[in-house]
Image 1: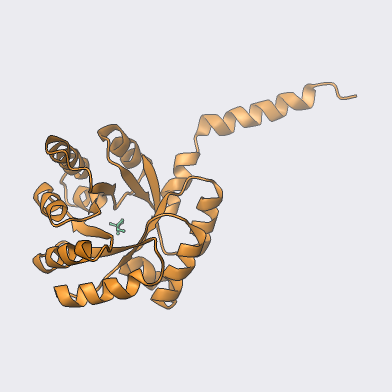
Image 2: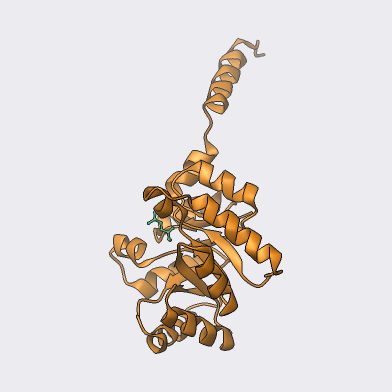
Length: 216
Ligand code: G3P
């Protein structure tokens, strides 16, 4: 499974990239707003750190506006993927962007039907938001399972599933077991994926025992 990092913070991206585990980056307007920096400047810097798909979101509500933004964003770097919200206008924009060779990530997916329609419109990626569904007492992972199965049934190969709105390491394990293509993971969760108390305990025990080894 590919691992993307879900942040617009360049320090977090640099650190995670140095671990050798980052295949791409996803941002959204909320993540960008936290940085207090110019949108395009941040996106450009992210593209210089990670050589993989970098999602940047369009904020227009009409298809023409989304496509215009997509054209501008895709000029920043060859790796730009334009995030488009799952609406009828978003589907129109996705179809048009696909025709123009612009990669899209249809976002705010909360049902399998939305994922199916986005794939039919030509989306490069669909992003089901698992954490936000869990928050309202629905099953985010059931949604991922349904999308994976539907795409498998019809041999959908051109649209990859990005499991988004990940809140904890179990979401990543479940996404992998289900067979989603990608998990986009916040920096804090990546840190938790590294750690295990038995690893720490084992290191401490080895270091303590090493002190007992006679040194020449
Ligand atoms: O990037 C989209 C998604 O991952 C947002 O997550 O935690 O705001 O639901 P969250």
